[in-house]
Length: 217
Ligand code: E4P
Image 1 (cartoon, rainbow, N blue to C red):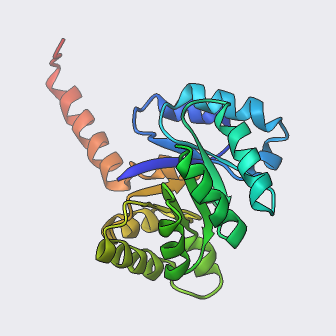
Image 2: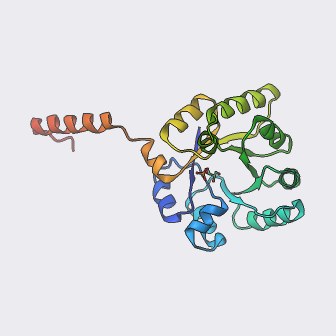
Image 3: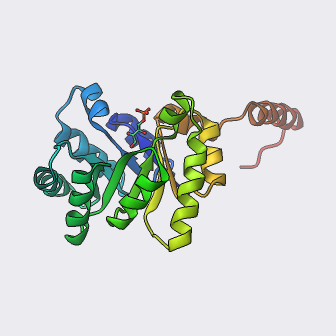
């Protein structure tokens, strides 16, 4: 499973990338606004820190402008993936950009039939927003399972990118449901390797080791 960071904090992304476990990054207009920085500068820094797919979102509402924006965004770095909305215009842009060899991430997916349409449009990634579905009293993880079944039924190669992740359990359940990737805020990425029993066990081992007076080096 690929692990992406959902962030525009390029300094924190670079720090976490040192683990070698950050496979890509997703951004969106809200995260760009939160950074209070020019989108191009932020994306350049992120693309320099992480060599995997970096999603940059086009913001127009008509397909010709979405396509033009996508072409501008892809010039920022070779690993840019153009993020497009799950609308008719977004799907048209997805088809056109895919035909041009541009990688795409169709975003704001809330149903399996939307995901089917994105796959038919040639999307590289589909982003089901599981946290927002849970927030609305629906079952976000059921959507991941449904998309997996639909894609496997027809051999679609579009990657399922579990998005809008709220907690570690979402990552575990996405992995169990067969998502290809998950994008998490940095705090959740850090929490993925943490466990209180690991910390307690390590403290006990260290204490016992110290009592031996030995040294490995
Ligand atoms: C993914 O590409 C989105 O940027 C993100 O996961 C949205 O998450 P949110 O619902 O926390 O805004």
